[in-house]
Image (tube, rainbow, N blue to C red; front, top):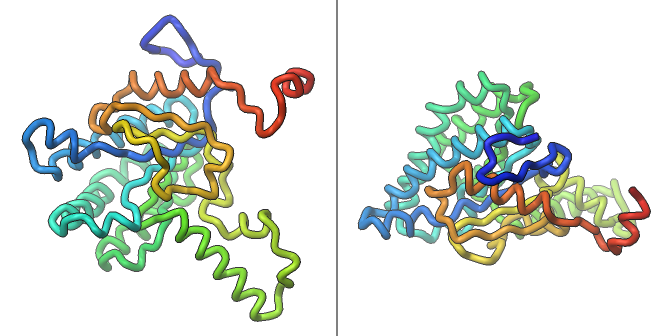
Length: 253
């Protein structure tokens, strides 16, 4: 059972999602409400990341994917983008040893070629240090977009066709899946977006085909343990049918 629930309910371990994906939205609005610069919200949001990672590992979630920086975020004000890049570097430098100590495996997805060499080096070092860990798999989506993900998969298949290694007729959704990011993980069971927005914003659009969606008005810096447990309770209360009827699921049990 999961303890410390904010109500009299409890969640069976079997009802936990294996893979949680989160769009961490609302840092800027959190800061604006307090008459602070937007970057202050991002800095506080890093603390929320630590909290959610710790809880996920504690409860036995197998994988946690966080949307840290989208391919569209380069359009934001230059000062904010520079601050986010600095936060990436400083957070990796500060936190990766503790993640490693706790057995957490760190992986990044997205087009890292656009990052500066210092950040690219930090990313590679973090992945190398934690690659053999067997605890929670923490995935950071940075300079990532769902359309980019599908495009890079199709490009690799096109190169195989060009080399004569595969016939076009052999391409199926399973074939494409092999080249999609995180093909070695179960697809997300549960998607969370904070801050009251109700869209997936080009995040893992292939992987979220059958994912349960959860939207909350809570801004990311305020998304604490109680808010996360409430979200997980919502997942536990749902019936996942994958195209079948409820009666079919009952018969299969």
